[in-house]
Image 1 (cartoon, rainbow, N blue to C red):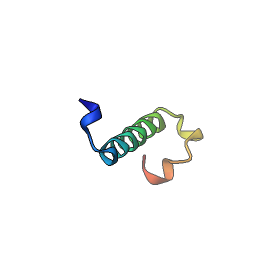
Image 2: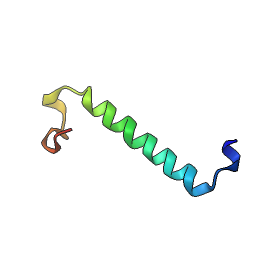
Image 3: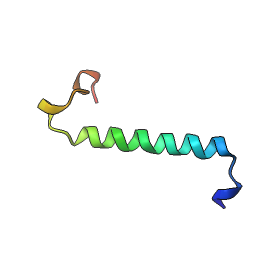
Image 4: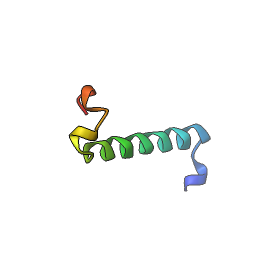
Length: 41
């Protein structure tokens, strides 16, 4: 069914997935090595 989705929806979905994965990975970084800690992530 994925081929029935509009291209923009697939692109947005991929970006959301990538951002969610990145934020999840950031949470597991040691705080001293985490450059995003100043943003409260």
